Image (tube, rainbow, N blue to C red):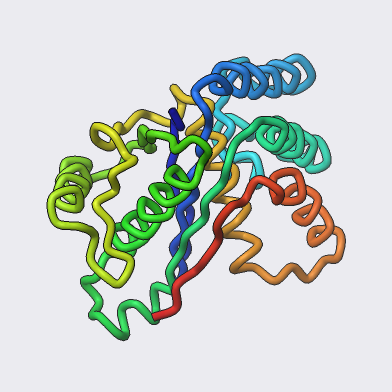
Length: 235
């Protein structure tokens, strides 16, 4: 079974989600590897042993990582170690996004990018699981968000009637419902967050400093080989 962890990253004009599909026999190993990244950081710096690996917080030295405000190189090293741990496991990454400005221009300002991107993401997760040899089942685990019951209903509706659009799917490889959990309790949701945050930065920010561009390329290079699908829809 593929335990598949979902998280989001967005700006006003762009919305992205990442899915980290992890074989069930790799989950404990990856979780422990990420625990070790934090343990090493806590031994060296002013970071709690249970600190959350949150992309934005590490990148900007916020929240539990505020004690490392002046330690940019060390924070990059922590992010890099986490991305190495992710890329070193047999995971698959699926990345979807939408141009929010174009979405609202075409379909109206009340159109919710999260609903659309999650639908597209689940379609691709289902296709990936079907193509595995042998085909896999998928359990979805997502970071807690508002409106959880609505997203569960959407999944139920898709199973009964198919997803809307030309890639209509009944998502037959996805089992049960969408399970929501607090990110601080799951290292693998945190892993999905690290991937989603960095993907959003590389897609939306043009670095003016060559060093920053090299760092982003290095970090992304740790997991690039695990990406099986990547697309931002521009309506």
